Length: 75
Image (tube, rainbow, N blue to C red):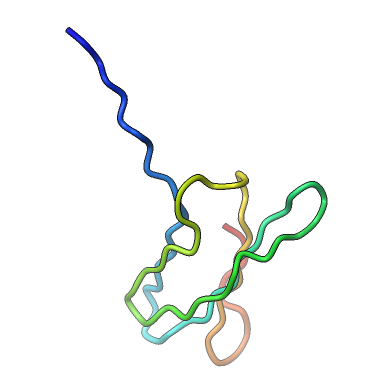
């Protein structure tokens, strides 16, 4: 009997369960510096995968906005 390992599926997927679109920005810290991960628009009820493949760090920081104040911070 042989065992075979399958590759891990990595990435960071973020979904908007709100009733309106959200603007999302992510970033992470690397060797004491902040690295921007990018910005995305996520339609209501949709998901985006801003980081595909292997994650570069254990912690990513996010900020999601609609019209008005921030809705979420930290992942």
